[in-house]
Length: 280
Ligand SMILES: C[S@@+](CC[C@H](N)C(=O)[O-])C[C@H]1O[C@@H](n2cnc3c(N)ncnc32)[C@H](O)[C@@H]1O
Image (tube, rainbow, N blue to C red; front, top):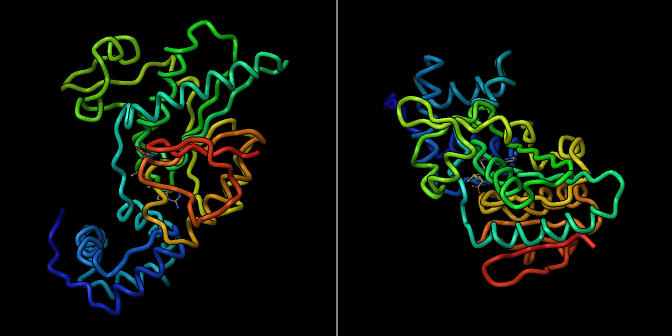
C-alpha cells in the first residue's frame, strides 16, 4: 500500500462512509476509519491528490465520478475467498443439488441455474462447477453458473481464472490435475470444461433493478457478504435475491450469517452450522 501521509479527518470519514453506504450498502463503523484511510490512500496517489477532502470532491463532482465510484468500491470491498471454502456446507450444497437434479429429471428443459452472488475472484462459482462435474459426470442436464460481484477488479480476475496455490490449498492433487492447467510460477488456470458453464456479471446486490436482470435460479450462494451490511442493506439484498429465485429454490449464507431478524420471506430448512433457506 502506498503511503501518502494524508490523514482522514472525522468529517471526511463520515462523508465517505455515507457515500460508500449509498453506493453499496457496505457499512463502515468508526472502528474502520483507519482501514478506509489505508485502503483509499492508493487512490490519492493514483489521482495525484494530496488530501481526502479533494478525493471526496472528486468522487462527488468530477466528470470521472462514475468510473471513480467503481474504483472506490474496488478499493473498499473485502474480497477474501478460496476454493472449497467451508467444505461441510458445500457437502450440504451437493445434497441439495442432487434433489434439484432429481426433480429436473421430470422436466423437459433440464436446466439448472446456480448463482454465486458476491463471488469475489471466482473461486466459489468455479468450486460449484467442479462439484457439479464430480457429482454429475454424465448428466445431460444443462448446468449454468453465474458469478457476480460489485467489484469490477475481482471480476477481471474471475474471468481470467488463474490462481496461485494458496487459494487452492483445499484442492486435492487429483482435482488440480483434472480441472486446472498448470502454468509457470506455481499458477493454475481453470480448465475450459468449467469455464464453459460459468459466466460473470457486475451486480450490486442492493440494487433491485440490477438484480432483476438475474432470475430463475434454483440455488443461490450468498456467502460472507451480508456480514458487511447493516440491517437495511441486509433486508434489501436478501429481498432482491428472493425475487431472483425460482419457487422452491434454495439460499445458502455464510456459516456466521443468518436471516434472523432480517426477513421472514424464507423458510429455514437447515440448522446448526449450515443455515439453509428455501423459497416456498
Ligand atoms: C468476502 S467476499 C466473499 C466471497 C465468496 N462469496 C466467499 O464466501 O468466499 C465478499 C464479496 O462481496 C462483494 N460485495 C460487497 N458488497 C456488495 C454488493 N453490494 N453487491 C455485490 N457484491 C458485493 C465484495 O466485493 C466481495 O468480493
